[in-house]
Image (cartoon, rainbow, N blue to C red; front, side, top):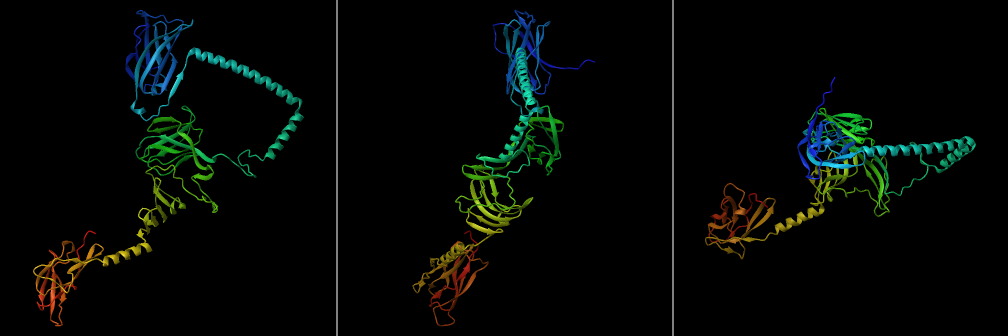
Length: 543
């Protein structure tokens, strides 16, 4: 049965000549999905006749975006034709490709046939694949020479090793008692060294390390690009030791909340806003692969060393860094000036918000005592409870920006704050008298100042009118618009007159619309009128 093969062909006639050596545009392109089907075909001519192709080999040299390739071409002697099928790794490198054909004759001659160029276009399905830089050189003579040299070196090394083994075996056979004594001495020496030799050994002496990073508890951190996926999509993440050797895998459903694990392969939940699959994997996994709706996307160098907990020092300052869990007490020497547990903010970005401190958790936060801030700016200190202990509503909160302390969202009055409010109230009551302009022949009496005191009370004012005016009836002054009374109709007051006669009294009014102040009724028009009884609250004002 014939094999069904198909190719995309791109090529031209190449004339061997010292003239017209500019690169030829093949006026075509391949796709990154033309796997094992992208074929270059060239008819070789000299002086307009087919070039004899016996006793020679042909190579192609190509370079493009992220790759360099030198490889052997197929030679059709009968048709004076050279063909080359682009390999599966090279076709993934999209972009412009520059290339040249070389002929090498068996007697030692070689020549350049011609330069040419074409394009590889990126297929839509390949737009999320990370292409690795590639350098691939294969030349028949080079490969042959390399194999011969390697074989000769291997033969020499094997002979040398066999000879050395024969000498050692003879020595061992002749002196087994001496070997036994040496082994016994070696064992005793090793025991005396008290060295840690294997997993489970117990150190009975002090272990000292002078390294800045003295001890790390690590794992392989996995990070593989998957792009945004819809809820319910099954994402398979598989690990491997090469592009062709694959092992464990787990299936993660987008939108789930559980960590999916198979032994030492653990993948974190993937949400609809997640573009990377993350988790842990053994460091031997140098490749990872995602499989989504049947589409495979492999990538290398996606598993890197991740330190979970570090014991070390910065200069002469020790640190424990990472996801540290301490069972029991951690003792710090109070006699030391810099003896303190602190969070290192050197790696915090400028706009990163954070809240850190020791606390109690049962999966979620239960309580915490700590400090919060943005970047390297400290904003508050807190002692709180619940999932967000760093919020004002959840505990004791000290805001360094406003200098205000609150308890469960209610501001706490300090002695200093209370005193300042009392001082302000005293100052408000010491408000000076603002004079009023008297109208219609009214005059101030008894050397008094006719005016008012405007005492602030929240978003209102307490107005107190003071002074004596001459006895008469009618409009005597107007109150400023800001200090109009909070009333629907005329605001009325009973006033006294400067007289011993009980009937000498007045009715005083203030209009809440225009502020006109009037003496409406009066006992005697020849007796002075007192204004001190006129006291009222204004409408709400913007303070």
